[in-house]
Image 1: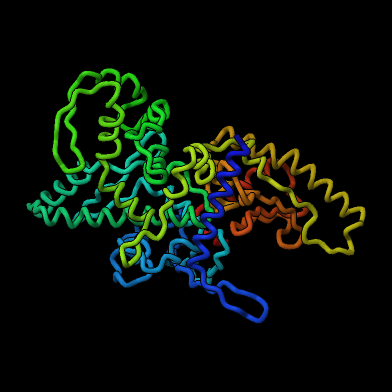
Image 2 (image 1 turned 60 degrees about the horizontal axis):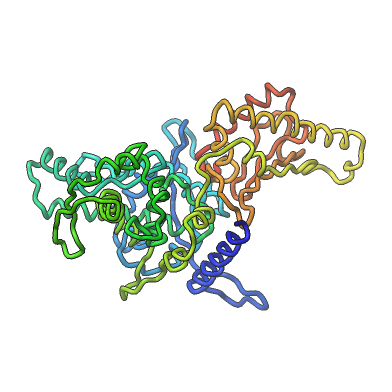
Length: 474
């Protein structure tokens, strides 16, 4: 129920706030207390070209190849987390403007008041499927696509691809060399876990495609197909499209009475006959969880980091194991898709902004405000509705331009996805492109509007194409 969900949400908020406070440094300045905790600085390289997209793979590769003494290396890749505040608290995401030949360099430094950090996380989720390690010059992917989102590749796939790549390039498949690349992969999986942990701790909704329900349960609730409380109908729904096609119930039914070789915790292998009592706890577990031990153990290492003494700093399973999966999913993760009505429901129009107070009661000004209201109701909102129906990706681009994230949360405790639609006389003059401010979730339109609905549609689409993925670069 909504009341139960609210209780779960408040419990999580208290847990999160108490944990963060333990790692926040304060300084007394007169009567005021100021947060002086050093923020982890992430420098995003932006190339001012047509795409302007930040390359997550390049960012991680460059940071991984730097000294292991850098703050980012220790925060993302190290097995022990020396400075928990670098993951549990806010980041400072800044960008470097890399101009192409023939362009003039200009200062585009921006302050991270939330928008760039959200954009960074959004790009991480969007580019997760492309994440890989390099074995020589050959990329070996770390994730694959399933019907419900991105999932880690199996151990067999990863080890086989590393072995084949080494053999082709050097004629050698020495086990110690293979192990070195597997450790490399673990560092990248650990970084993904740390990024998810950071997103959760700073109340930034995680994309549902980045962690599918089966692995949400395993990594955040310590719940797997082995657990009796994991409802079998839920398991069937969660594994659909991962390993058993679109009809896992039939696939599993066909396997009953067949033999399956499994391995216990001590490494002993045995053959068992599959029946209704063990097909979920043994076969499904082996196929979905045990087959991905490399990725899942490293991601869990990122999500439940240890300090230099080997003690767990934070383990989200301590709080989420007591919640139903549906409640946790609504608190932490995004909706799986966007509808025009959901986006329109987030909009808050702000009319008559930026003009002279002396003219506020003039007839012309009052007429202009009425035109703004008519424009919002009869042109702006219908445009989003029509465009969203014809091009589903448009809605996610619009939300990303306004907020930094290309999705909406299930439940929004702080209404952080309320999007202001401001009609401004001074900062957005007639004919100007709409401007977006991701730090405050804002789209700014000219107070004197546009000449026609057709003109607005063209200008709006152009503005979104120029703005999406730019980290707020104007």
